[in-house]
Length: 379
Image (cartoon, rainbow, N blue to C red; front, side):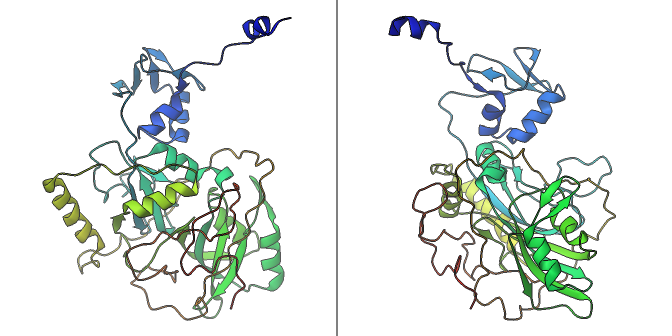
């Protein structure tokens, strides 16, 4: 058979782009969100219920909940990212039937697209949450194959011995499969049966940190996320406040998951002034009349941590566990009420740390991270 005959017998590649990828790229929602909406029958393509894996092109009309989605071939991705220091009592959803406060209540409204939360925290957990208008960035940061480590400051109640630490780092079997901490370091603070630890997980499974400690017969009394990948939560961002990342910080974060830089949209003078006012208001300390919302009883699974299906890593090498930063042995400064001892990536505005200069797991040299102690022995 000739080469021409072979080419004619081979099936043509599918045309168009997957529906969930298209909607995620223009900021309608994350891929996981879109897949759930397709299953619920909320998305139609050309007036017909969409199906999982369906491909679309620019000639297809896409609607979500009856609202037609406008898109243009030349439209570029709008990539903005904000950091939020979540207090307890807030849930990671846009609308709550019970009327409880949500993490979206305090965020500014973007001119283009909408905020997509990068992972979730349950109602009792405080600390770092990130939001973006770029669905592809959100999807990659949450996907297990990119191994974005999450670091938590946790206060446990009960006696912790070396055997427990060894089991938690080796791995224990939970109801949804094996799980483990890639790193656990004792932190100063706590008294009696209360002890603080910094621990790292590589996934965002529902209540994973709490369930790991509970598997050893311990109770987690406080839990705060202090780092997501290269992004640190520092003392410049009070609880209940947000701030937008700079162009440089967003570019570093995007490079972590293999995305090319995208210039932020230009703002007119009026919009820029308004955003700066909101920014100043969001970063000032809480006033006397702005107490952190009181904790409400949590329901099992009410705010599940977002976790896409795990994909095989193939020949990729496992990323080494992060070593604690220098200076952690010092007792942290007293935090405002509701805060847990956390890490501070510096007193400056930047909270995104570049990676060290060794080859990363994808085989490309990573940029240097000034002052990094990653993968170095603990002093």
